[in-house]
Amino acid sequence: MKSAGFLAGTVFVFVFVAASASAHAAEVPEAIHQAVAHPDRPEEDRARDADRRPGEVLAFLGIEPGMTVADLMAGSGYYSDILCRVVGPDGKVYVQNNSYVLERFGKVMVPTIDKRLGQPELAHCVRLDSELDALPFEEGELDAVLMALFYHDTYWQKVDREKMNAQVLRALAPGGVFGIVDHHAEAGSKDRDVKTIHRVDAEMVKEEILAAGFTLEAESQVLRHPDDDLSTNVFAPGIRGKTDRFLYKFRKPK
Image (cartoon, rainbow, N blue to C red; front, side, top):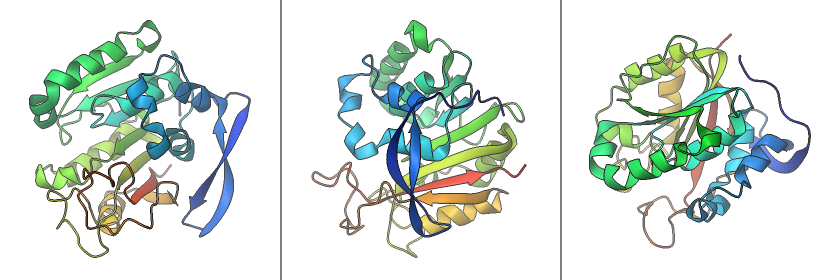
């Protein structure tokens, strides 16, 4: 692993780990805290922080300075911006989107990404236009991979997920982390809701990634919203940003 180790100083939050089914205090390192609080982050990004809780998410996944990270289906780069600041100039972040998203939303998305990455302090982060089942990474190149709020879309976009997950596994160094955030669907619903209301059965996602050769290290409850009835479109007024979400931390065996 290429991570340089956490910087001194921490802020404390609570993260829940499924393996023990009990809560424990987890540290949000100063590098992550400062990245989230950075004054150069856009105001529209900051407005989403209360719902997305990026500090807790990235701390749970173990993102550190010096890492090489892929932000898969990064959109306009909400997480990419923070990741770039956390890993610092000794690290690297790939800001990946596929052709489907770029063709439909690129007029807004691409200028936003390019503006972010045009900042001198983010010069170590690069835009990557690539299909999810044709990822160009070298074997063992990455320390961590994040896919936030998109795995459900891989079903109706007909991504070869078996191939995608195999490529992620190959690209990660031994011990590397694959983090998944997505919207809960009803248990047992499989892929029924992936296009209509943009939710997915968490157990099905877990089974697919485990089948690729990963181990599930932990599941965080930090994005849970038990009052969400799981039947509403995630973009509907009143529920957007407040859906019940799962957060998995998978690891490539050493």
